[in-house]
Image (tube, rainbow, N blue to C red; front, side, top):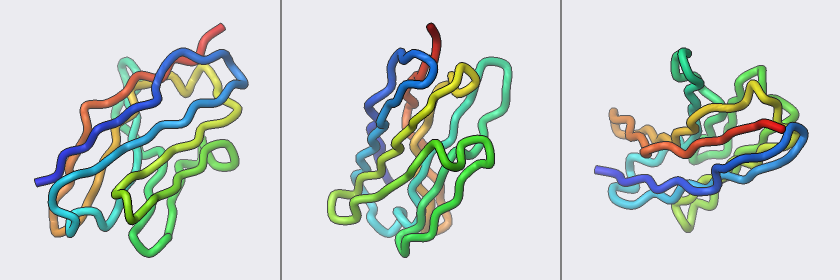
Length: 115
């Protein structure tokens, strides 16, 4: 079992920045991949960014060059630096981990981009 605690969401103006954090606890063998999905109202949950234990990263096309994912392996923590935010980035952002055949989800943190 893995528990995930997200923080860092909030209200930001278009063009602004936010940094999300996700701290994992529990079975470290499940932390092969750590990343973020998001779900906007009326839409399906979609991948934002994911980083492997070995350092490989994957981004959605819509956030490339604006968002950066990073991991602190020693702290079992993942970060998502979000720059140049747009209203269409408004969503609940979910931290997720995958490994040992299981995926776990956090409760989500709301990011609202609005003037």
